[in-house]
Length: 248
Length: 341
Image 1 (cartoon, chains in turn blue, cyan):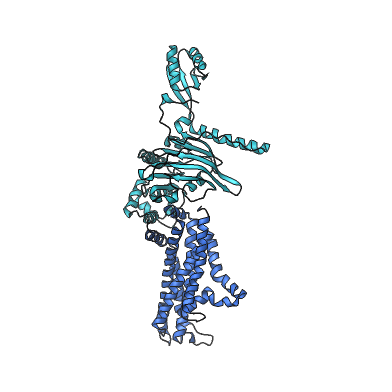
Image 2 (image 1 turned 90 degrees about the horizontal axis):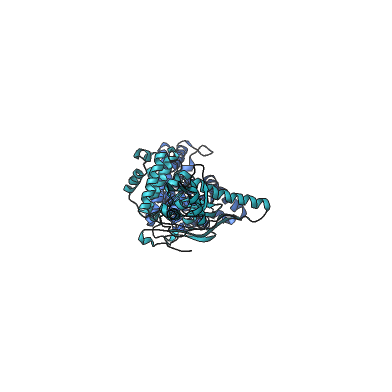
């Protein structure tokens, strides 16, 4: 069997449950919330300066940090459910080479995360674009800026999904995997910054905004690479885990 | 031990378990387990709950690692088979499905992973008796029997020459059990290797050619079921006293039963017949009195438990009965070739 077959099979796994639709619903809710905020929201002084420039609008539409979190939860649930439902047995029976099987699974979950990132950013940009005519400001973000927002969101979605899948594979329990993803993406980073303030530019949320082009703590290239590292660590740990542990 | 594993290219696969041991901490789940499963036969893998059957199967399939010993399929470890999913069809867990996925999609995922065409999904669904309407439904709406059929469909998807099935009859209705029996018999008749674990002993007795009985991870006995459950010969003659004397002289144990027949152990049917013929004694019946599989199973497993209990009571190491293992294919015996024990 080819790796392409395996990845397609894993993609079908993701696509043949209701979970992607649930996450899509979350993305729609977030986009609508953004649109409503643009249409009726104001700053503390009652003005709408938060959408008054192209940079402000790009910052509002930057979805990468959200994509990282949402796709992280998606990946954690998708991977952990394989163990909870015992469907992982068929996976490793079909592909006893666990590196190959896990690689196909992570590729598929990463692709699904990328699609979530794409949809999340596209919906958000669309909602903001639709809402802006209801205000005194037009759509001022540059095409390049929008492309960067979407690209960063796609990357963050893929990275978040692989990070979550790594945690899900290690924990093998859906609740524990979700808790692990929240810990890794929400709780642990600020604690790390408290322990080492120099780490602040390298936590996922900081890297996501840099990748989206709305901050410049580091270079975009470094931010993209560092985001990748956040996924590589749990992915490698997961790989070691599946090689060392019995499947069931 | 003798290894008769044939090359996978021949299409016949012997399963070999060679001194397999699996421990969790200090507890041995599988303990020096050695037996073989022959192609062309249906082999029942029996043992009480928690005796290590599922773990042994998982070790064979590289889902669990052994602390010691090896398992091979046609001379190869599962992971080294050129086409593992196309070689071995497996049913392990009764609920190895995503509940929100349809039965058909479950099979399509498996088919895609192993490079089988979608047409094969429909063929296999028909083979196990799952209707197209049922296949479109979510697995969460299935009965246990339907889940078993779906599991079996997954195992048959690539038409593999080896089947390893853990409790496949669980939840099946009588018709389903008969269909399963026919299917497995047909597979064995084609030279396929079939290993089936079950606790439905009456059903197994009708299904299998050979049995492997384990208890507390240790081999109790293995061999053709016909030989293992054969116990004694029943002889009816108008001259029981004279025949009894002749048979005892040849080393047999003879007991009359309540109907007046002689129950003979220690000689096979052929020897009894010859002895009667030599003595000029007419026989009205010469037949085998067989134990049920349940009797055999209970005697093997309860003996171990008794030994274990005694060992715990007296604080001495437990000894368990271990019958001699058969590692080669036993010839098919007719009643006249029976070995009585």
